[in-house]
Image (tube, rainbow, N blue to C red; front, side, top):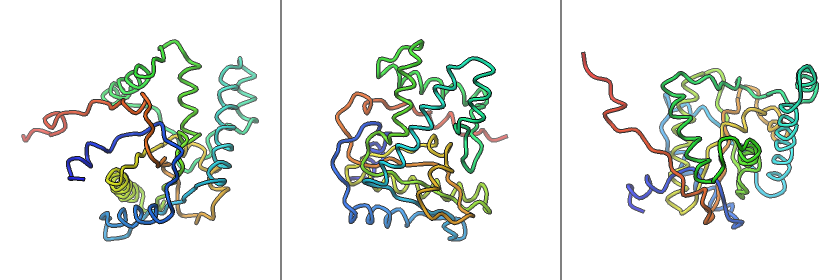
Length: 238
């Protein structure tokens, strides 16, 4: 593709076909992603790749966590408190989940959610519908490949920066080959569960997952949130 076509082709894909992604193609995409720059070339990130039976086992473990968490949410206090503490549903990831958006950012997050659920015909009061859609994150949207991005914990925000550049390069490489991707911070909420399936070095922390495969013809894939204008993101000189 032309570069501009690649940029416009890259969007969050939330429905995939059952077409496999070959090991050779996956290796090529990762090799292309390794051209990404990083702070003093430290490349402070690693990936864990899940396909086939391994991917299904991880998905089963995560969806079981999610289903249990949704059950706990429906209980009354103090059952909710006890079930939450003893039911194995508390976040066990490397980073604390943070949903406390500042007002400026919260507005855009709400608009994004409204746009997605509106595209799917899920009404605001339809909690079960929203929960079913959220559950698909832990099913990896039926993508044939799920990658888990880990960053080195000792480099803090700079590891996150390097990992983000690597991830974007990987997503653009995938778009150039006609594949779709969806970055998923949600799977990192139960990062401890993901760790059980890989030999992960202690210093590396799970920051997000990435579903990867061939996009399906599904209405959910028509949704694309509105991006800000250039003048909205540039600070004015004093």
